[in-house]
Length: 460
Image (tube, rainbow, N blue to C red; front, side):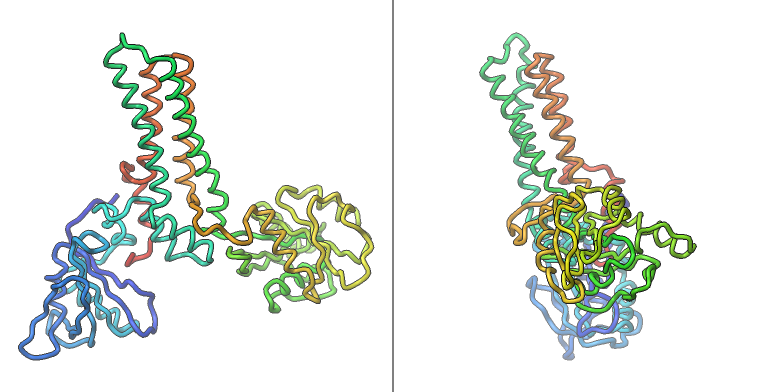
């Protein structure tokens, strides 16, 4: 980690470009001193005051170098004991626009502030105990969320719900470890069998709860990152028409000529409260044209990366060997058979390919699309109505720490039941609690913190 600094930092906290309002944020021990050099009272004889906290006032933003007025602004002081970063904070609300915000930030830097690094405001909130590490990550997730599910998942983390569950299990493991280490100080006092059984049961309960949290990662990843859905099939089965129907607009070119789609197309799509990225791939077949061949190769790459595959087949034509081969080649646990063109007479049934899941649609008439979306959510194990209070693990870092802690707890249980030595059991519990400490940020390597906060935008 770059290391804590007592510098006062400044950054534009709002998006760039024309806007009604832009915010320049200051944080640091001398934030009020810096702000005073940038601000002047609107009336002669008046001075700029920063008490009480959290009360907006009006002033003139000016250049600290020559006093030239820049804008008529509102400024909002926040005293350290009540601020989000744990330091004195001043937010200056000026009129939006690229030039004004650049001049406002330049004024802050000229007055003695330093330009903030990406994520440095949130980093200071973490270092000053305003947020734990999971909550700090949730700040970035909240800002980047592009679906209702992503917002809900980020809010649960920001509220500290995951951290509380983790801390509960951490405290349980610490209690067991303390009891074991107390017995190590008096080796002649053996743990009674009933106490040993109770401790083993406690380790099992903690490991089970940690495993349950880790198992929520699949849903949490979908909520945070969205779903990758690929339309797959041989040429001329209606993949592009289905993409247009799902999007509600003509995005892909549709033609009776095979090989019209030479490269994959991608478009965002709302799927329930999830955000999906829909890929229309080139028709999978043996291609001789170099351009089409490259498109087919890219189709295979999208197939591997997808969370869900929609295998589109023409229900109005007899299935070919190519249809059967393609079904056999695809990972069937994430493949949904879509029988298209039900506006025409259908010539094959649901069991023709042996697919466990099939929906029937007409891409040209928009029939069956609701059933398609509902079945897709079921295959993703995502309920149509997400549980608003569910705590989801959204990052691989979280899942890895939970799994490591659970494994160490179960290894400790096995050692305890095998009477392998209390010192070895205590060692496993130390490993478990260390993993949970790193998860919430009680102790985390500096390089981990660097990677986490470097992914934030400037101003957060």
